[in-house]
Length: 133
Image 1 (cartoon, rainbow, N blue to C red):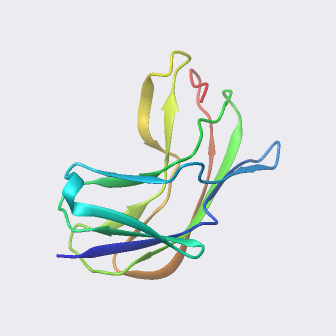
Image 2: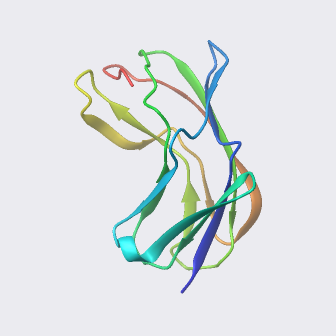
């Protein structure tokens, strides 16, 4: 089964208080089955093709300093080309403690089920206590 996702390069994480934006620094994809995933850039879009049955991710943002109570807005446009019973597309951030240890692997995101045409995923979240990035 082929599962393709397009992610607009306009993916941005913005601190509402500072109005700063971050974009992909060094984009990469990860999958539990490394042979099942590829990524290509087509203009302003990253095209991810995933043929596996387990989770995968698209990353490449620098770590962003944060303090409890900071408000962030996350937005991107996605397109999931192939229907699959278990397939969805999600956004989220990884929360880390002062030592850099992961506290939560997916926080503050939004999701859409496959298949979907170009869809904006947008969320706003507040950084909880104990998080620094």
